[in-house]
Picture 1 (cartoon, rainbow, N blue to C red):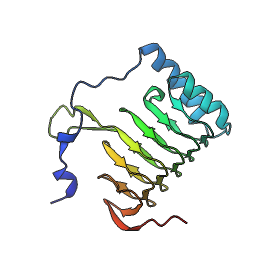
Picture 2 (cartoon, rainbow, N blue to C red):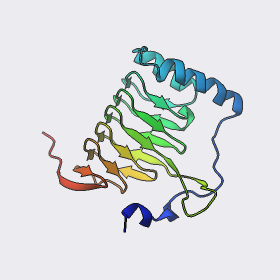
Picture 3 (cartoon, rainbow, N blue to C red):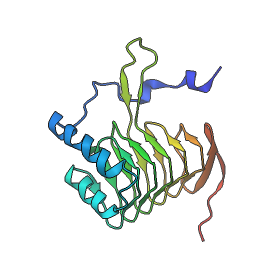
Amino acid sequence: MNNYLKTDLSKYDKSEYKIGANPMKRFFWYFTNEFFFKNSLNPFSGLKVFLLRLYGAKIGKGVVIKPAVNIKYPWRLKIGNYSWIGEKVWIDNLADVEIGDNCCISQGALLLSGSHDYLKTTFNVIVGKIILEEGVWIGAKSIVYPNILCKSHSILGVNSVATKDLEPYFIYHGNPAVKISKREIR
């Protein structure tokens, strides 16, 4: 049987989903995101950091945000110091997403904090927080599922899918991602 059909939905927040901002704020964020973030012609990271803070994100110092990044709700985003968000990253943060200090989210990666309850015909939205602790590296075109904790200095390799928590100082690869080796930092 496919592993995805055996997913345990009990760990997700099935309470009524709350966006966390009024309709006017969401309206203005939509256009800000389109023109200043998703637009690949805007290379100005400092402007993006300023705008994220304006909309309620908690952003540390030295954060770099590359072009064509898509962020669902900045008021549900926290990024630590000296972290790097690569081109075409999608932070689909229906729930809170916390990115620690010195993290790297490579090109095309997806942090997916929401899904749907496939056990119901109504496909209710279910959400789960994502936390990337200090020194985590999410490889290019990788996906982090809802309700995942990537512990300190873990790595999710290129084109991999994190369906379970990642242990500290280990490298994971595959779909679903499995532990392949210890991360030795020199």
